[in-house]
Length: 192
Image 1 (cartoon, rainbow, N blue to C red):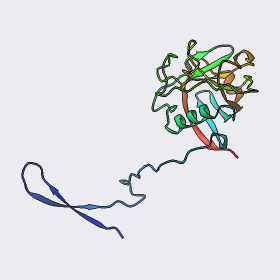
Image 2 (image 1 turned 180 degrees about the horizontal axis):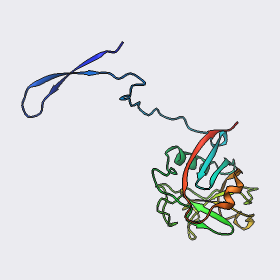
Image 3 (image 1 turned 45 degrees about the vertical axis):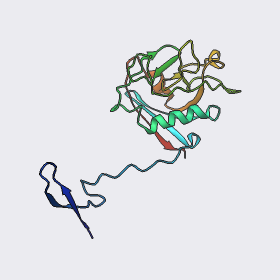
């Protein structure tokens, strides 16, 4: 049963009170806007990142060696930081060895509001499909929202960059990405 809520409102400036009846919306009504529920903390190792581009889709798993970075990136994904309707992100760097995105200005100089420290872990191995955090040349702890995906094996990066993910499907898409191609969105889905 729909309840009616009587509200007494003081009309500003005239000193009179006016009674107004407001009908509570029901779930499913067009006018019902649910409050966002607090989200549980997501375990990055239990989800895959689905990276949608104009050239196709890649899926990435998070790696256990960089837990702070994986948590940071999953939080950005949950906040829809990488969605096209928020920022018009593009792959602003496309070389023979990597593609790079995650800068809202597409210049390679910006990111989200929180930097993360370098996390180098024993046994990390940058190879085709590896996903790492970009940082400035002079500060390895300046990683943020920008990330790169390796198009070839790059072992010289192993001691200088955080490796936090691995593309497990869509490697053909990785090779098709060109400079200024659109990053449509990144979302999370449970591992099966």
